[in-house]
Length: 510
Ligand code: ADP
Image 1 (cartoon, protein in one colour):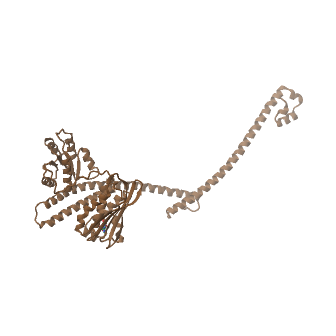
Image 2: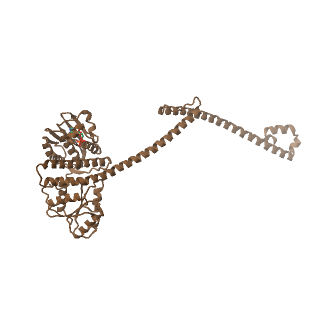
Image 3: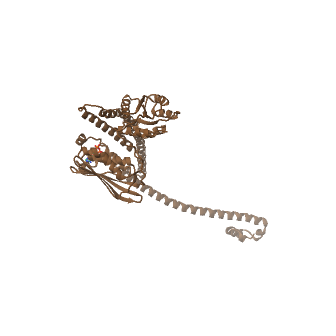
């Protein structure tokens, strides 16, 4: 190796210190080579550490800049947080003078306190929600029990008052008997309204879709209200738009309930006047039609300030009216709810002393003309059951008395059982055409008795009709799935019982 290839410093030192002879000697050259390696290694390490230093210097600068920015953001955040907190709660103590760190601690403590409060509030809200749910359930249970308890004696009252009216009585008693009948009927309607309202409030209403001929439908409603209107010297006129489709699809029972209620109100608050029910086609939207209904009267009218509150439950325009005309103040509230559930609403225009107009619109799908068989109408007076064999299963003595009397008047052959167990025994021994079955009875209830009768091998299975004060949601389904054929909710109207009995007498089980 030539010394000119050595590290510059070593080259200089070797040239200066070593003679040519020495430089020709092998051991000297080896020694120099070793020193050259050390010089080179030192040089390389020096460069590496210099580079490393310059890199960390740069990183340090960047880091410092980043920290400054972060600190700025932190300070701004504290200011904003404080502003937000003071906007929420002007009395919150989030200031501590000029120390930002203390401010931050105050803000954090405030937020911690708020979180603690929110958690408490949340726990309270959950508790309140649970008790509200319990209260709703208690209300439903209460309604179910009370309606049963009220319906049972009411059934006897209504039945007896109808029977007394039919039986021979002194002319002097006529007025008392009428008051008894009307009061019992009113009580019956009130209980139905309360239960209906509760059902609607709980959202337990499903709307059916049947073909309705609106023309025939409103004519029927006019007929049903005609006698009452005549009693008060009112005329009822019905105007139906010629452009209406022949049939629409909708819930006839609920529509009937709404229109009957409006008509009965119009009649209640009008004397010697006129009532007009108008049905108009307002829009055609493809397969749907919008129909507007209105009931206008020339009665006492409603003060403007009262026109909104009458749609709230249990409210009436004034208490004097309540005393004079009666009513629960539930009718319009039910109408409003029924319409709201169908994306509609009820409206009123009225002038005191001149009259009122109630109106609403409903959307219907166009119908196809296939009308369900109307239930057979039958009146109390021509209700001859022509020797049909009936087993009456009922434990309440008064109810037995009333039902037995009615059935005998209609020429049925009646036997009575006071509980389900006895009814099963009788049904096995005797061939009945129809069994009228109460549900709640001692020893064995009506559902169990029905299942046993249905599972027995009999020459011919009787028609079984539930006769019960249980009229809450699901009761009817339960009866039918136990094997019953039909369902009558107490208190029963005589026309309804005779209608059902005649229908089933004609359509006995094969
Ligand atoms: P109710 O008739 O049983 O009291 P509603 O909810 O049907 O209950 O009616 C609430 C109130 O609205 C009535 O008490 C009466 O003051 C007023 N109202 C309803 N319809 C009419 C009407 N056609 N004319 C005058 N007032 C009416």
